[in-house]
Image (cartoon, rainbow, N blue to C red; front, side, top):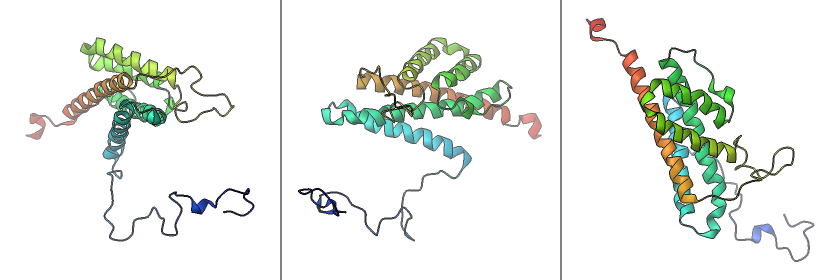
Length: 214
């Protein structure tokens, strides 16, 4: 590593760093008891990820909210984790609502990473299935719109520049970490309630009636 290095620059292997080793592998050794996320089933695959990204956002958010200046760089993964969590919630909720409304089940991937388009599809369907939640739904739509303005395509918190070289977050002036965190927690809770409610209603529809069981 030190061949043709400038004079005065120490060999990288002499630095106090974690460094590649021949023992490094991502494949567990036989008999190793490691983390086994329930990712192999259709149901848990979606919801394990939804819960995982929210949990990670909460952990990073708690550190960021403590206010140490050195931790401000955590803003990028913090906001990105929250954004992806909410995107997943919307994409899982959409087909459930369509099923309840007797609509053709769409492919959420057509919306790519646009929170604006996802909410435009999901919001009116929530209004049809849960019409009593108008005020709460309006708040959720407003907060999602604000998040989408900051990061319309899930690239702005992840990358410093676009493919065309233009800088991301060009109009970003910062956030109040605690308020940002709480607002997205509240949105997440609302979407969770919608997911649970839709799941309950679907189960009610799918459950055989007592007369059918006789």
